[in-house]
Length: 283
Image 1 (cartoon, rainbow, N blue to C red):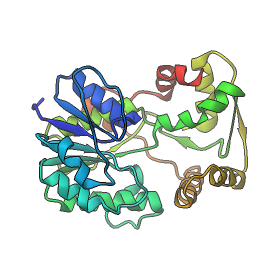
Image 2: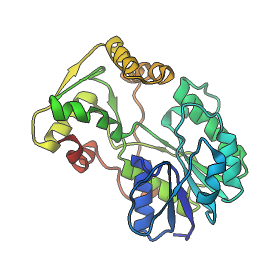
Image 3: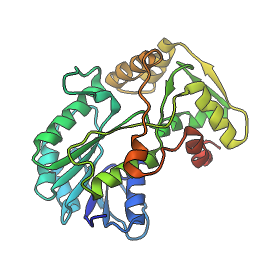
Image 4: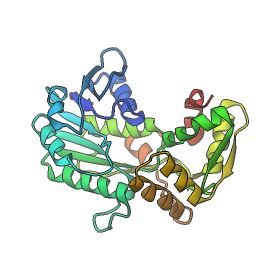
């Protein structure tokens, strides 16, 4: 791999953290952007900075030529300033986008798809070398069930039959490492997926298997789930985007492909493997 100096944003998250770990393990100089204190492997430098305040990024970007960009907001406001700041230091950005963006001639379907589509457009227009990774749903999002699994052994959620090819964060990271350290994915928008469609009910069963105790799925109405998300303080645009889009996936599921294996040389990990890797989070 070509030796580059890389800044990982979102380094405290599941995907960003996996990117940091894999780059460090490969001997690639990597720096982690954080907003608060965080711990990383010895030799990884953590630097404070906030994508919401582009002027705070200069120290983190000093000496960096490649950036892994995880956008933490629900709109693209401020992204142009961030990309301008990146462009003063680096020459390449790899953006973590979403499967929902689709092709240029498709209209964005919701708030989440809209900001990802706009970030892709801004990144392409920035003058930087770029790649945009489009993963399907993250397996790590099921960690939202962890407290209920630990305390009640019951997951109360809508859409038991919703089947998705959830992708392990380590596989997203492996593709990101290829984009960050080689020219294989320059100007590309690879759609990357888990290896198979798994229903939510089956996801719970596999988590139960991983932790070695009973867990059951109790289906609730979509309206009740929307009320619960709203009461929990989730932004309205997120509530309006996520659950209706997921309901449509029952009849029009996300695609499944072998891009992870094509790009990295290793097959995508199954949800069973993900559940085993994260069993401690649910116990």
